[in-house]
Image (cartoon, rainbow, N blue to C red; front, top):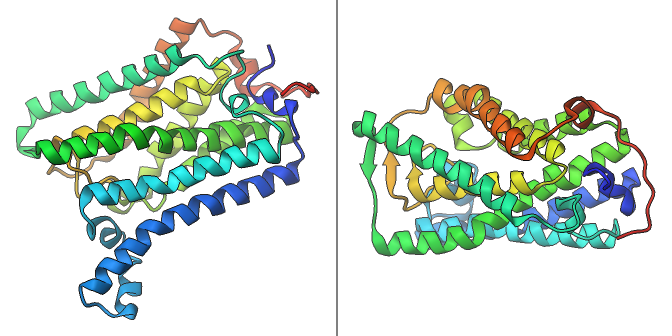
Length: 319
């Protein structure tokens, strides 16, 4: 069985193709994200604001997040990732002559049990953490449940959040991980670059505005965590399940004025974010424990080679 990064050698691995491919994916993705901006613009225009006033307000993320009805805004936010997902499929197939499966796993078939297990682990962890904190500090929570709005939220979340998170995994731990690995012939370089880029993707998140740039530690740390389990398992399946579970459960159960997703969730958090509990504990405590759990379940070996080894060129006509 070829390794995960080595799947790239089943297709075209010229560095220029990866540069063009990333640019194409990014443009298609961003075209999708402009749809939300158009609706916000039209809403503000309907409210009587001038074009110049609207353009000034659109630079404020609170305006982008708070102008439209919450569920509709959530749908529009996720819609951009649907475009991006389509962009990845086109680029992988047309530029690199690969199947989408090559970006997901080095095994013969996608292992849905791995996706389900990882999803379940983080779902239990998030649910348990929220309920425990609610019991310990009920004054920090406001019960926010409205059945009709929540059902719409759940429908949007269940159908579209996995597309958003899988797109991000395919882009960073799939396309770019294999691209950097095949170009630099180094697993460590691929891990570091994709993790830092993943953190940079979140630099404009409201959590960063609230906590400062130290908040990027959790995003870069999450990138390293997802990259490590991808390289050790030689597949994206665990990362796909984890990312989907994390974002979906968070969107359904908890929102706050300073979070990226403003939703009709079960609870609204009234407290302030903390660098210790929201940034450093996940990176330094939860992620190492989860890596240990996955390593025991799947009997991972050859850590040094899989994380720091050279990527071996293995030409293949197989697609």
